[in-house]
Length: 122
Image (cartoon, rainbow, N blue to C red; front, side, top):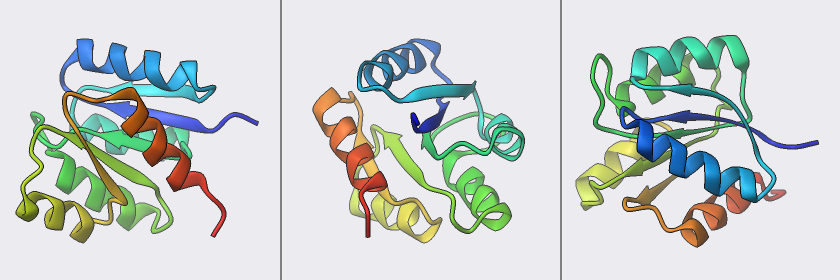
């Protein structure tokens, strides 16, 4: 069974690129959101296996959206996708319960490696 992903980024072209990368690797995109509030609502509705989440978005940023998703589902898998890769940002993503940070511009091999790691057996 394909792993189900939610893509969250305020840039539609970025979401299109992410969709292309993950679908080529046989993941299923079950939803897309353009801000963190939409992401939280869609997560509750769709219960995807993993969320790819931008950090800088309108309405609700990715860090706060991740916190709200993890409050709802402590087992939620969330990978940050951001151009902000400073150590303080990485620490904030981990503190919010995100499992990895993929830098933008996204390289397909980096993204797919993080997805594989997220779904690897413990």
